[in-house]
Image (tube, rainbow, N blue to C red):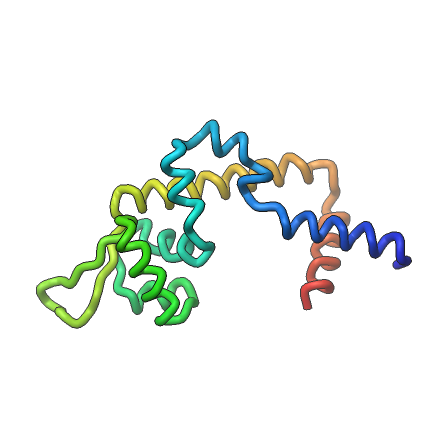
Amino acid sequence: MNDKQYQEIASLLERLSRNNAMSIYGNWIKNSFSKELIASVSVLTHNDLKILDSLFKQDLSISDVVSRTGLSQGGVSRRVNMMSKKGIIHKYQNDKNKKTVFLKLNPIGQELVDFHRKLHDHIKEIFFQKTQRFNEEQIRVVISFLEAILT
């Protein structure tokens, strides 16, 4: 690799890390979802979305969310408290076990998970479209290159 190639790769990686979903997919997002939903999702972190996604199919205890997301107990508790105050998640205890706090998505939480999943599906679709011109070997080289940079 020479200096020019390094500069080009570094510039592209910087652009990639600087871009967020809104800047890359903004028009699709604006045309597919309400302003209220976009405003709600814009205050959430990636970890918030991981927590919400873990609750998509069923109510879980905070401990179960910790296990499924790999996040810390304290981190999950802080984010759950914030999302509970915003009406995204409902916290409750069942009659059988008063010690354990369970979490349930409120309707806005369900909408946010739906938004997140649709966004990922859209990103995947675009990714496949943009990479169709590359053969398997070229894709393996890109994967190897990225793995080498990230390790």
